[in-house]
Amino acid sequence: MDLNLTDEQIQFEDSFRKFCLREIAPKVEAAEQSGVASSTFEKLGSAGYLGLLHSECYGGQAASAVTAVLAQSILSYYCGSTFFSTGASAGLFALPIKYAGSDAQKEKYLPSIISGASIGCLAVTEAGAGSDVSALQTTLRPLPGGGYRLDGQKAYITNAPTADYALVLARLCRGPEIPKGPSSLTLCIVDLHGPGISRGKPLNKLGLRGSPTGELFFDGVEIAEESLLGRPGSGFRQTMQAFDWERLSMSAYCVGVMQACMDESRRYSRQRKAFGRIIAKHQSVAFMLADIK
Image (cartoon, helix red, strand yellow):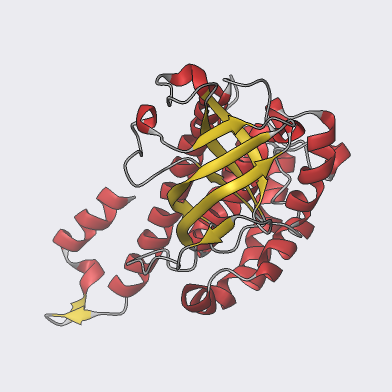
């Protein structure tokens, strides 16, 4: 097995790093203060980043997972907030549509997400249900004339304050009681600019402040039958599939951030002097740098 990068991947790595240095790095401070700008999504869309894992027919690149992870680690090196916001949109929102959506859903949502013209999010977590998905209380109830009524609240959702669309995980209730277990969990696509939807204030976070996180409230939101993702009751499997990719992405994020820390530590250790020489020459400091590397 050849574990080396291909010539095409090496060329992409070089060009995308130059793009981030030019378009992302100068805007990090502004992003941390005011949020990742919509223009940044559009520029990353034009650069092909948002469509790396998506089909060419929707404007994507149809690249390999290796190329996508390589790009994510580079973006994370320069701005973690941009990584999280774009990942929630092009990854957590768009990938389930890629894998389980109808042709009509793909044509409606994927091109604008891939181009950066629209922003998406995945709304799973609730105040009392995070890793414990079995505790979800958001409900989908059939309406007499067709379609469904969505009621509930989601918390700690990346992109909630700014997203145009959300994939919402809810329990499909056929009767008055809220069912338990994964078999009732269903994903639906929600236009967050529609009636019955409100948003909480963005959380005042300690880090990654440029990636907006907040609450979503659904009060009698009408959901059309064609807005369900896949068949009813398949939401748990679809969500876990999205989380599988998220975990790999988080590894790429950690690599990028750690490399940035390493480079900054090395730079500082070659400037700071103590006891008559730069601290990089002190063995204890050199050991720490070697451990990071």
